Image (cartoon, rainbow, N blue to C red; front, side, top):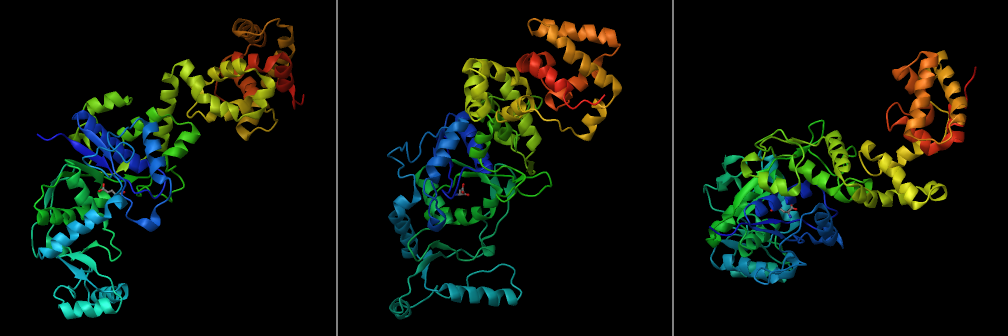
Length: 485
Ligand code: GLU
C-alpha cells in the first residue's frame, strides 16, 4: 500500500480558526497513526481575500499546538513543491488546456452580466439550482474571434457528463450518492488565468500524491465535481471523509461572527489556554474514542487512539465550559517550574505586583493559586480580589456579613490576629480553633464571613494562605472595615 499522505490546506485569509485547527489535528493524527506524512498546503487563489502574513501565522499557531507539518512552503520536498497555489498558475493552465484539447472542457466568453441574467431567467422559470446553459460549448472560430475583438477573455468550463454516477464511499458518512446531471458545466480556470478551488485542489492532491482527504462537511458538495475531474484525467482519487460541523450551544453552526465563542487559536493563547488542553478538547470534538471513559489524552495518546471509525456522524457541540475545565486540568498537571514559566507573562502585566513583591515572592504567590485557575489569565482576578480592597459586596455576601455572629467573628479575629507572632498555617489555624471554641461557631458559619471580607468570594484558596499574603495589619483592617456595630 502507498504511504499515507494527508494534507491541511488553509486559505491565508486570516488567523487559524478553531475549526481549521480541528481539521488539521485529525489529518495530523491520521498521518502519524499510519506512519504517513502530514502536508501543509496554502490555497491562496482567492487573491482579494488573502491577508499578508496569514500563512505564517497559521503555521506558527499550528506549531504552538504541537502540530508540525512534514512538508510545507517552509519545509518543501522538491518532488512535490511548490506548496503555494499561486506559485504554479502555469501548471493549472496547462492541465486546463489539456482538457480543452481533449474536448472535455471549453472556453466560455460569457460576461458576468450575461451569466447573472441567465441565472435570473432560470430561477424565474422555476429552476431550483442554476446550471450554465452551454452557450459557449459549440462556438465557431469566428464567434470566438468576435468575442476576443470585443476585449473578452475566456474562462474554461468543464464539460460535465450527462447522467454519470459520481457517488462515492465517504470515510465518515458511508455511501454518498451524486449524479453529474445535478452539476452544471463549472468554471475550472477563471478568465484572469487563476484556477478555481475545485480544479486546483484536484491537480494538487494528485501531484502531491495525497491518499486521504479529511475535511469539513461544507466541502461535501464539491466532491462530485472533483471526482469528475479525476475521471477526465484518469487519475485515482484519494479517499474522502467529510467531518461534521461544529455547532454552538444553541445548535447553530459555529460562525466567525459568533461572539459567544472565541474563534481563533491565537486568542486562546492570549487568554492563557494551554496548547495541550486545546488539542485535547478538539480531539474529543467530533471523535469518540473506543474506551470512551477517559477525558485526558496527550498528543501521543491521541495518535494511538485515533481511527476513522470514531469520527462522529452528527454535529459536534462546542462546549465552552468543558474547554475551561480541560484547561484547568492541564494547569493542575503542570510541574511547578513549567507553571511559573507559563504564568510569568501574565504576572508581568499586573503592575502593583512589582512594587509589593520580589520576583521569587511573586512566583511563590502564584503557586498558591495553581489549583484555582481555569486559564492562566485568571490569575489577575485572583490577585485583584485579594490585593485590591473594596467594601462593595453583593446581596448574598451582605446577608452573611450582616449576621450578628459574623460581625462578632470578624471583630474577634481582627483583634486576636495582632497577637500572633509569626503568621503561618499552624498559627492561623490554631487561632481559628480557639475562636471557634469560644464563640461556639464553626464550619461555614465561621469561615464564610472571613473569606468574603478578605476576598469577595465564597470559594477559593485556603484562608491561612490569604492571611499570610495580606499580613496582620491589612487583614485586621479589612476584617473590620465598614462594620457597623
Ligand atoms: N482551502 C480549502 C478551505 O480552506 C480546503 C478545502 C479542502 O480541504 O479541500 O476550506
